[in-house]
Amino acid sequence: EEKMTLLERDLDSASASPSSWGKNSGHLARGRKQSQSQSQKKNTPPPHRQNSQGNKSKIHNNQNRKTSQGSQKGQKQQKQKQPQQRKQKNSPNDSGKGNRQRGGNQKGGTAKKPATLAQFDDPHKRKKASKAQVVQLKLVNKQVTLFSHLPQYERPESVSLSVKPQGTEHIHPAIVNLGIKYADHVIVGSDARCIAMLDAFAQVIQDYHAPTDKSISIDLDLKLRPLIQFLKDCRPLSIGMGNAIKFLKRKIGRLGTKPEAEAKAFLAEEIILYQEQKIISAGAIIVENAVSNVRDGDVILVYAHSSLVARALIEAKKREIDFRVVVVDSHPKFEGRTLMRRLVEVGIHCTYSLITSLSYVLEGVTKVFIGAHALFSNGAVIARVGTAVVALMAHAHSVPVLVLSESYKFHERVQLDAITFNELEDPSDLVTNTPNAKLLESWETNSSLKMLNLAFDITPLEHVSVVVTEVGMIPPTSVPVVLREASQKLEKL
Image (cartoon, rainbow, N blue to C red; front, side, top):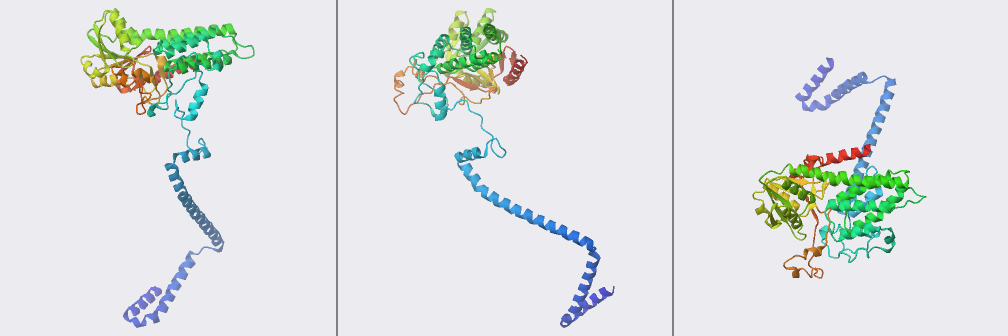
């Protein structure tokens, strides 16, 4: 209280007489120093605590200095990395080099990209593919740039004479005969090509003699590789054929130490069972399921040619169901003529039209039956080029689209377009059966003209109503379920 009265007295005197501020200021300063010293005495710890607190403050200060220095270094590193990242974004080649130097699979690196199906626009991939070929094929010079990643060869005058000298002794005569039929399109259709291939492999296995110093499973697998490559050189394999080859190789790998005669009999029996269960019996069940959807008065539209569709319609006619068929066809193969001929022979009333008039012939159509080359796990359907247009127009007219396919044509791949994977056929086929063929006869010498002849296209699952298979009538979204169940059965075997 005495201190406060002194302070108040000094302040009053200072405010009353400004000239006396300097005289009283010393007294005021002394009062402040005394109050500060007393407060410090109250707050100061004992001597033994002062050292510990001083050490703590020093440690804390050192840590603050380190963190500040670390943050400054981090800011400098970020400033240095920013121009490097900009350079990598601007130059994709440099970024690829950096990823390879750092290591793609290590922490901080980027994951490796999955290998593409075909990269024939890459000279290294093209050179590697040419080394693996059994038949000497020449790439087409004038190829559409968008599909340059797919292989397209000139048609050889003779497939058997084009075989490389080092590969003639490894090619079985049955495989040579089959390859020639593939190249000349004598055997067409996924089912017919797969059955013929399995028959040829059965003949190869029958004539095979195992060496005494090698395992039969390893040696037979090596002997089949050039045969498979020969068939690929003649014509790219279908999805169903690839699945059949995987099945055969899996069975060959499980031969173990079986004697040669027993191994041959085992493989021959497995091939026959695969043909019977996956293709023949499966086709019969699909025909039965498809016929159950045909009613009296139906107008069924079909496109191109499918063996399953033809069998289903012929079976429906045998059961005396009253319906008629609209056959839609397209250039250049005109496969619908073969289907129309088969249907007319059994007495089915047919209407033939080209795909250019599809929007008009769809009036009055109640169902659309189409075949399939393969089905992918995302529900997309790959079929003869033009099928996607038919399914799109049918979906726009609210006409149900039924796809007939065996499950051995299912594949776990996901595909959204017909560019990444397709088959390029001979461009000269577009010149044949054309009214003004003379305008296109000199296309090979015309530098400003290129020809594109695609074999297949992709139909999205939104345009497919149901898929008729041997396991039942399923939506296209159930394709991965069928694949998963099939793989589980194979694991149990």
